[in-house]
Structures are given as C-alpha cells and as structure tokens.
Length: 249
Image (cartoon, rainbow, N blue to C red; front, side, top):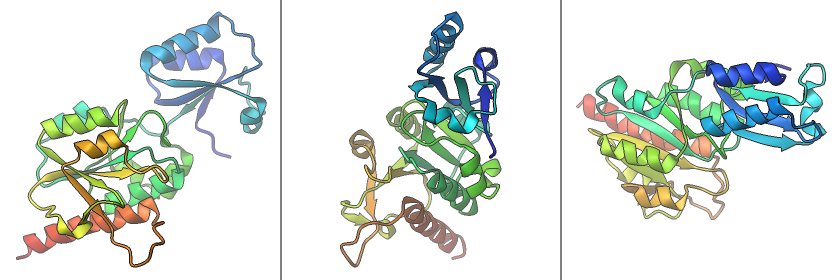
C-alpha cells in the first residue's frame, strides 16, 4: 500500500515547524500519553489551521509496520497553492476555475481534476476542512492530471468566492432546484468559477446566496442522482463548446 504520511512525534513536529510539507490531517492515537511533544504538535497545528484528530486503534491498523509512536501526519503528494498567489499569477481572461464545496469522495476529486485539465480549467479550489484532500487515490484516478493544474486550498469557500468576485470573476453554482439550465448561461467573454456541491449536501447556502448564476442539469425522470464528477463534465464542456463556437465564427 502506498502511504502519503509522516510517522512519529519528532518527524511530525519537524514537518509542522518547517512548513515544507502539505499536511492534510494529523491522527493521534487516543491511548497515547499526552506529553510535551504531543501538546506542541497540537498547538502548532492549531496555529496553522491543520486538523488533528484523536482516533482509535482501528485507524492505525494499516500503519502497524511503521514506528508511528501514536502520531501520524497525512500529507499531500502535491503542493497546494494559495488563492491570492493564484489570482496574482497572471491576467486571466475568459478563464474558468472550479470550486468544490465539500466533495468527500477521492474518486470524484480525481475524476474532476482529470476532466478539468482536459477542458482547460485554470485551477481547482477545495476547502481545508470537511473535504477530501489530495492523496494517492486522487493522484491515481487523475491519471497524472494532478500535476498539470493548480490545486488551491482555502480555509473558507465563502471568503474565496468573495475574493474571486472582487477580482471580476463571476460565480456559477450548480443546484438541482435552480431555474436556469446549464446551457442557458453565456460562459464566453468572462472569467467564471463553477461551484459544485458535496455529494449529498450540495452547495452550502452561504455560497449559493453569493452566486451570480444558479444552474441545473435538466432530468427527464425524477431519478436525480447524477454523479458530481459527471455533472461537472457536462457543464464545463458546455462552456468550452460555447467558447470554441464563438472563436470559430
């Protein structure tokens, strides 16, 4: 099994202090004695906004061959980008990004990344909490596409939306109950951020309220269970179709 993790109190502490590794989450065994080193790890994690969690032995079953000392930091195989850095990189024109509001399934994230690269999306924004982070499963499903697009991690999706809007990006939120169909929107000539919601909860209310456009994919039947990665593909390739159609006229 491929493992993207750092094991042991000293190693995790050094990784936290150096800031050279992207840490998704820190797992702490419930039964270990909380000494000064563990307290230090918790404090630095709090300061840096890194999630730490006390878990049972079952979570450590796959790591028994490692000298973990009851401390494991799950790391990302890639370096995340800051949204301010992303927005300052270049003068974006007629570009798109996707905002994933709480996607929990690694296979969905990997598939979305792969599709995004194929469609020319400029970046993918994910929250630091209550969302799947980039791991070995995501990397594998993306078929290498993970290395060809910036992954932007933010503490707040709502704040990310506000920053995008201040930088003249339009926000398009996908929602099953929306009035407009996804093909009714003119995606050409503007920078837009497409918000896709969590598999079961959808787009959060605060983000939905901030959206400039709300769109849906019409369904012939009442079986409204389209996979989020499939839904993303349908919408983003409609935007690409419009852009290509405009350019060739």
